[in-house]
Image (cartoon, rainbow, N blue to C red; front, side, top):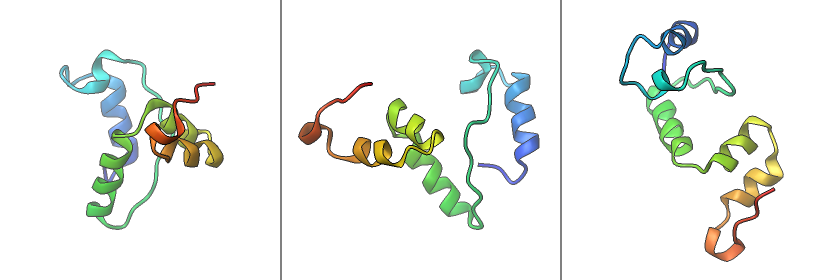
Length: 83
């Protein structure tokens, strides 16, 4: 979450903070973002997405709404459909 997206991207891309998640995964590329007017809402969304599987995050990035819905269903009920 940030109030200055450009500044935050520069921070991530510089790798200046050695113990951040992205510092060992350079280069980084922004794939998706959402604008929120309420910081609490932004934090809630960020925490929610961080808990998602990689394939669900990819569906969001690709705007593949059918897969996003499918990957949101109960894993035990619908199984693991990997393509």
